Image (spheres, rainbow, N blue to C red):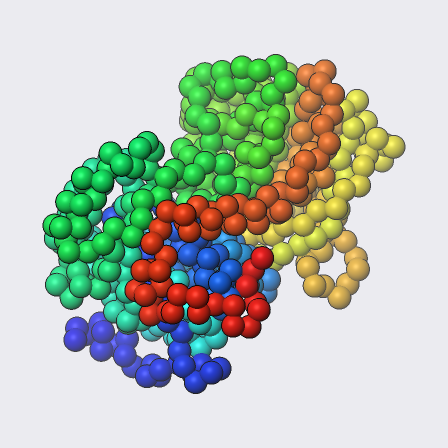
Length: 555
C-alpha cells in the first residue's frame, strides 16, 4: 500500500450501511481516451437498469468540465452526471460527482467540492497536496450511494493508461479497486486505430488492473459490422476478453455532451457562414470562446427544424448570421480579450448595427456591459476590463458563487421595435439556473431588464428584475443558464428572427424535455439491441431479469 493509499484509508468505514443490509453492486465504464462516449454509455446502462426495476445511480469521482449542472439544492456538479441521474429517473446529488475541476487558466482550475467552490489550484499543487483529501471524499460519497441504490454505474476520466498520472489516480483504476468494480473499456472507432488503442491500453496497465477489465465496447461505428468481425475475433483471441458489443453511431439525440471536446459533434462547422443555404432556415452562430462554459445552453436549438447551428471562432467564419449567441465563460475577462484580438467583437458590433439579433448568457452577458471589475483576482489577473459597452452596467467579481435554480417570467418585445411597456411585449414563463461569481450593478436607471425571477422553492412570491435588453429586443443578456430550454420563450424569440426575414411564425414543436426523455429511451433501446446485456448483467454481479422487483421501472 502506498503512502497515499494509507492516508485515504483513514477514517473510512469498512462498508457503507444499506437499507436492506447489503451494499450496491458497482460497474465501471472507462475509456481508451477522452470523448470516446463513456458518458453516453453510462447513461444508456443507467436507463436500462432503471427500466429493469433496479435502483440505479451514476458516479464519477472527479470530473474536469466547465459544463456544469445545478442540483435542486443549489449545488454544482458535472453536467454528465446530472444527465445520467435524469436517465435513472432520480434527483442528482453531489455524491454523484463529489469533485469537479473547472479550468480557469492554462494550468489551474477552480476546485468544486460537493457542489461548492473550495479554491483555485495550480495543477501540480492540487496533485501533490489535495489528492489525499479528495480521495477520502470520493470514497465516502460512493459509500453513501452504495447504501441507497442497487447498482452504481461509475464513469472513469480520460484514459486509465496515463502512466504519469496513475500513481495518484482517484478516478480510474484505483477508484475501481476501491469500489471492487468490474470495468468495461470503451473505445471510439470513428477516430481510427481502435484495436491499437484497446491493446495499447491493456499493455500499459498493471496485471491486476488488466484483470479488472472484463470486456470491451466499440463505440461510434459506421458501416457494415460484418466487415469488422475478423478484427473482433482477433481482439478477443489476443486479449482473452469479450467484445460486449459494437454500438453504431447514433445521431440526433437531445442529450448533453460532457465537455467542449464534443463541440465538433454538437455544432455544424462552417468556414464561411454558408450553412444557411436554405432561405427558410435561421443561421444561428455561437461564438466559440476558448474557455466556453455550459455550451449546452444552445442544445435546444439543435432540435429546431428552422435552425442551422454553427460555431464561430474567426472572422472568416462569421458569414451572415441571423442570430449570434455569446455563451458562458469560465474566465470572462480573458475570453473578452480573445474576442477583441480575433476581431469578433467588431463582427458582433457590425452585426447589431445592421439590425441583427444577439444574446449573451452568463459570461457572455457580462461582456455586454461597460466594464468588468476583479480587484481581488477572483477570476483572472485583469483587475479592470472594458466591456463591449452595449448596456449601462458593470460587473464585480467576488468570492461568493451564486448557484441556484430560478423561475419566473420573460418579457419579449415585438418585432416592430416596440419599447419598454409596449402592448407588444409578451410575458412568457421561464426557468433555469445560475452559476456565476460576478454581480451586475446598473450605472443608471436606463437599463431595461426583461426578466423577473426568484429562486425555486422560495417562500417569497416576489420576482426580482434580471438581465438586460435593448428597447427593440434585438439584443438581450441574462445570467440564467437554460433560458433556451424554455419552449415557448425559445420559439417566440426565433419567430422574431423569422419575421425579420419575412417568414411566417412557427408554432412550438415537441417540448424539449419530452424529446430529451425520448432520447434516453432511444439510447437505451439502441444499447439493448447492440450490447450483450446478459453478459453485462453477469459481469456486474446481477441476475438478468432481477429488475421489476418493486414496480419502480421507468416506462
